[in-house]
Amino acid sequence: MKYAENLLTIAAFVAIFFVLQGKIYSVGTNSSTLDGETTQKAASLTAVTTKTCPPCKKLKPIIKRLRDEGYMCVNLNYRDYTGPEKIKSVPTLLYFDKDGNLIDKEVGLQTYEHIKDKLIPAYKIS
Image 1 (cartoon, helix red, strand yellow):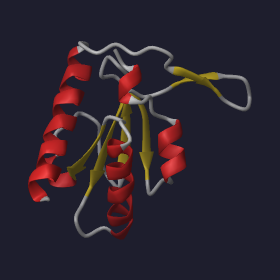
Image 2: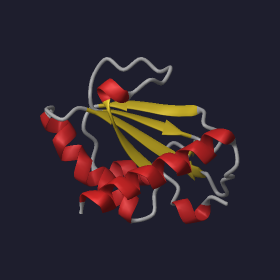
Image 3: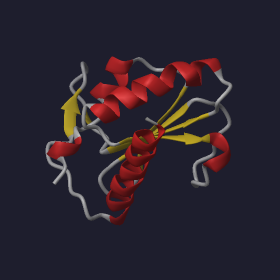
Image 4: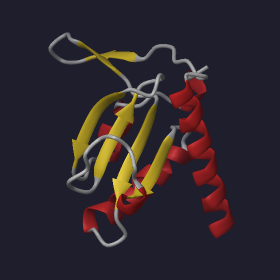
């Protein structure tokens, strides 16, 4: 079981690497909000968490479920995160576009539906 989890984590890292390198291109990345504005959907999600934080523990199964459903999501431990974005609280959700640019940052536990609504399924990224 641990081997399968490690394999999924590696696959997510590879997918995010290609997104950051611009090798994967997205189609249909926009959605409309209630006020009529167009917002960009994210191609990938990085969740920065810790092992001991209670909201982080609740978020991890949500991230796994989204990954199992074909979304590019990765869960990183706060101590392992080396990105340029300042992380002061966990969990922090970082949403990236197809070019690897940060398009949204959320702090705190979010629902499965909320996160899913902000993401593009991996099979739609070509």
